[in-house]
Length: 371
Image (spheres, rainbow, N blue to C red):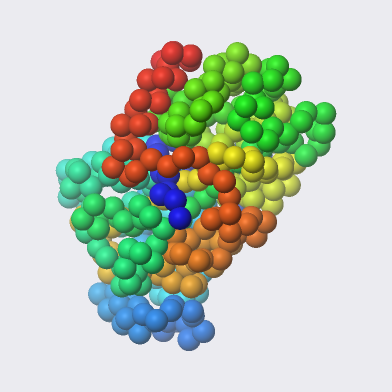
């Protein structure tokens, strides 16, 4: 399997506008429960006894909540609900935050010693920086027998963080508009037929589009893509508003949204948005999000349990239900997508080189879009 690519700072902090109703009924935390025992029907894998013991220890210590900071943490309701079903006395709450605001939040808590967050959940570029700052506590999930059980590049330096979810991005088009051909390759976007019809994220800031271009730069024709997008007057959205292009397409303002995540497509579709998701025939993009326990977390035992649980069969099923893949080798695929190994992806960049590659991509993008 290939090395996973990261999701950097440019990730949504929640579905907005036309997408807002997709998760509105469930809020940002799991409902309360009066049960004190782990669910007997839970599928926790071979380490079930260890997880149940940790659950009892966490509850006895009064650690009955987990607060997660991250880009999609406010929309991971199926994961939170599934965890709650297995461990009824612990409530998971997602705080949607990304990029500089997340950096500032972690920095402030580290400086003051007044911690609220338990887990940082974001892409490798940010997680590498958080580890370097000393903001993470090394932890090895008991449910991970060895790193070979996971996709490559799933384990951070010194076990500071572990990759837990991988999502695939594709092209979003409006299902009510059949007049515009769906692009099948990046080169298709060079056609003047797409002039003024493309929406994408800002590649001049560290984020998903910059990372896409960093990987495309490794392909023979990759360097032509940005020039073509600029020539076709692609509209760019802030790197921290990853569903901006999807919303523009859903509302009919644009015809094609680039680099849009399958989980957010599913949420938009469920809310009634007229959108269609298409994978390219080559050089698709995937992103991995990582969990790391924040140093000074007020609920470290509960946080460990949650991270352990993400690698269980129940965790993998919940991840797939939201449209992503678990990083556990052989895990179930999301409905509507093939096995991850069968999707033709962009060339890979090793985890240790990704920061440099993305910074170089940002510099290259500024030649076209300034900034």
